[in-house]
Length: 143
Image (cartoon, rainbow, N blue to C red; front, top):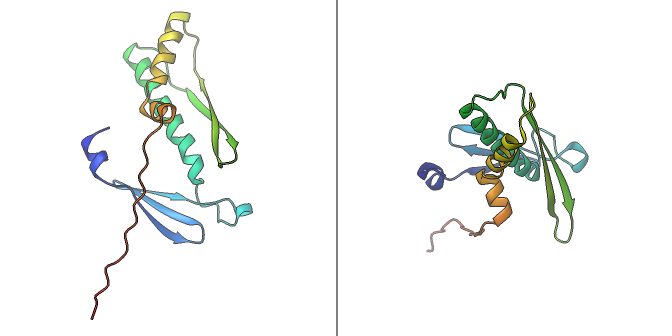
């Protein structure tokens, strides 16, 4: 993680209904609930974003591995299945499937899997992360 991402907060604001906007550096991401859950389906649900983060991180590390070794990666895709659980509500399992455009040797596959598992999103989800939640309220003037 770069120093910038550690210091610059991601800012989430309520936009309407169950829709929220997340400002990440210069990027605006919309998060919403599906229509059958009362939202407008203007974007993925918050929990889906965990799968997006994991899948794109794995894809980046696989692409970088292939690029460095001059292995083909054009047409590669990553699919992420999220299997839920309850009490508490959460994702119990991610199944990440990397579909490669060509066959690789057994040795290349071992190294590629090691590269895919080394992405920071994978490490974070596997090892867990401390979460602190703080609340701030506006300061009101007293007379």
